[in-house]
Length: 311
Image (spheres, rainbow, N blue to C red):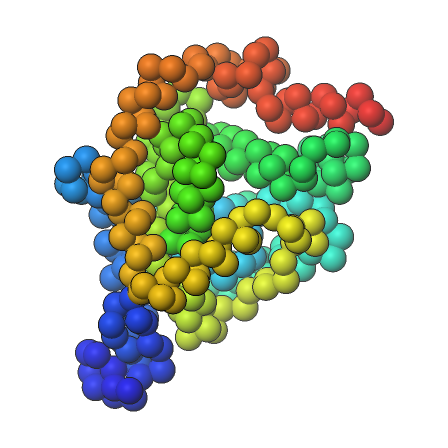
């Protein structure tokens, strides 16, 4: 195959774009997709929404040690954005320490600022939470991480918190929420969740790029990443949904992006209106001040109290 742009020997073929690229042109392709993602996603009527952020703003990038978040951090830095990394150490033996080392080496190698939050110091080490709470650990871990991301962005004075969620992640989440008709989640799903009182702006600049496309970029850029799955994740429903969607994409290239953009342009607004009418009102958590709709304490403060009560 020949590169679509320069006609050199291609090394990456993308069926969804009916194109193949040499390494240098592929890096340019990846950068353009990130740029397009930052410019905004389709809104009602197909019009583009507002940009995710600008070069004048400070962006906190959540780093897991995986290829997606590290690729995002590197590309945003290469494009001149003001980025700082955030690593949440979950204290999972044999996993968190390896991921932390990857993130620290990555940031040192590229001269990027890094902040670390240690959940063990917060009394919320994930193995401890798993041991003491009789709830699915993945959902609890996700709730804690989102809480930490938000607080770190607000307390650090950042304009937005960026995550490395790619198109596969977003479509699998959309599929899951649609299967359950979860209005609350469908109402705010998208690459941009604007700031609200008590909530930092949340952005997903990789929303146009698949996991395969991000993996190719990470390989071509020589990014060392943590690739072992979380030891607590086997059996997670997300993995099953991603497999279903991968088979659909293989048979119908480009369908994932069409599905996601179609939802943003024609479906999301309806769920947002319904949630605005029927959603539970938010009030500050009595302990930490974070907005919550679940009573006196937010979900994370309830987790913290439950862990302490079973000590």
